[in-house]
Each structure stands twice: as structure tokens, then as C-alpha cells.
Length: 337
Ligand code: PBG
Image 1: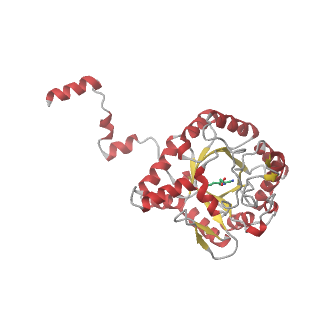
Image 2: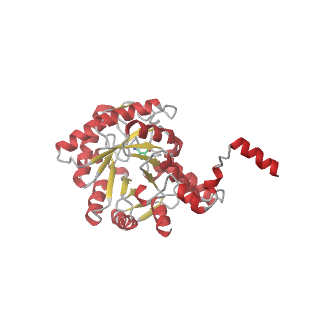
Image 3: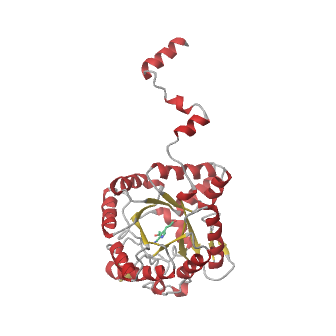
């Protein structure tokens, strides 16, 4: 026994990592990253009508909600200290068309929600997406001409939609459609319309991922989508290309960057934070949420602990915050502690 101790001391030179891990209080002293409610952005799904909460089967615990319910949800979120919401509309099928023209309707679902939320709960941030996929009959993020998602025409429409979203009260515009030149165009359009203080959180590195499945169910684009989004989203194999793409967004005026999906792309979070030092966010997307929920429902993992561990991992990877469907659960958990 004594000999063994000597052997380990010889090997470690008396450096023992476990000293700092020996008790709860030492572990708390040396903990490098912490999750707080300020790290959370809550994505919510909107539907037309009033008084309806509609469960999304592939995302247990997540509901689509009408604007009045979204206002109630915003109040609850603000009371818990969540800084911001991100809204995604499930647009009625009859309003969807080839060009996503409803995105330019000033009183469309997403804009009605922004106006109502900002009126009732002025101190919660509202982040809106300008991608066209909720509005198009083909489920693509841009305008489809023949077989092509046309870039420049989409950028013009997205920039105008951003102005209407800002007019309705959106605080941060978050374009997720990955068209080239969109950040610069949106910045110019916002400034020209007097919206200098409205920020842009770029979905700077959005990968062509299979993790978006449940989201496409939530906004009913899954069945519509023809083909895939590989001509505009980034290949999951490419990290350096992702950094280059983010560089352009920074040059064009992005205030914040986002990486999407989250957990499989922590290397990208780290690289962007190191490269630019901008506020950097990760989107823990629907498929990531669904996997945790499904495994937990089967008793295969401890859902709450896995949820907290994944979110802390984003902090360790350099993120300043996380868009997560767990936001309310985490906020309640942190409030109980
Ligand atoms: C599309 C968009 C997507 C998500 C948000 N906006 C991906 C897509 O369907 O292509 C995914 C969010 C999630 O999976 O949680 N502009």
C-alpha cells in the first residue's frame, strides 16, 4: 500500500488533480463556467387564432401558440428573467406561395406577435427570423425560380421583410436563409428606415443538417420541401468555409453571430468566438431537443442533467448564450436552486 502511494507520487510529482475535486465546496470554487438565466433565448412557434396551445408531437413539451398565448408566455419568460424570445410562425397553407409574399405583409403572423409582445412585455427582447421558408409553398428559405433558389431577389425581399419586422417591434433581426450579401443589405435597409438601433444576429454558420426535422413539422414545411437546402446552407464537413462565411457577415455589419445546429458544432462556436470576439450564440435545434426528450422518456438518460450538461458545454465552447427549447425548464430549474 505504502509503496503504491510512493509510485503514484513519483509519477505525478505530487500534482494531484483530485485535490480540487474532493468536495462540493472545492468544486464550486474552481468551476469555470456557469449557466444563468441570462444565457437563454427561447424559440417559440406561432399559429393564427386565439386561445390555442397545440402540442408538437416530435417536440414533447413544446407547443405552437396563438398570439395571445405567446403574450402570456412572454410574460412568464420575462418574470423568470429570460432576456429574449425568438419567434417562428406556422403560416396558414393558403397564404404560402412560390415567392413567400406573405413575408411582406405588414400584419402577418410574425409581425402581429412582435407588436403584441412588445406592447404587453416591453422589456423582453424579440428576435425575428426573415427566412422565407414559413411563407413559401415549397418550403425553401428563398425564392424558387425553376430549379434555383435565386440569391439577389431573395436578399431584396428579406431586407424589406426585415424593415417591416422592425416596424412591428422586433429588436433583433436574425436572418437564417444563408443568402450571400444579406447582412449588408438588411443593415442598409434598416438604417434607411430609421432603425439604427435594431440589431442583426446573423445565423452566420448554418449547416445543411438533418437535425432540423422536428422544426419542419412544427411550422409544417417538412411535407412541402422539394429537394434539400445544400445550395445555400453549409456542408457539415466544412469548418474553414464556415469561418469564411462568418467573416463576410462580420464585415457586412452583424452585431452577433449564431452557430446552428449546436452541440455537433461546438468547434465552430469556439472558432468564431476566437476569430471575431463578437457575442456568439448557439442554436440547440429541434432534433437535439427531440433526441434528449426521447431518450429521457425511455429512461435511458436523466433528461434534466443532460439538458444542463449540454447547455454548459455551449458556455465552455465560448458561447454567450443559447437558443434552446429548454429555456423555460432551465429558467425554472435555476430559479429553484
Ligand atoms: C429555416 C429554419 C430552420 C430552423 C429555423 N429556421 C431550419 C430549416 O428547416 O431549414 C431550425 C430550427 C430547429 O430545428 O430548431 N430558415
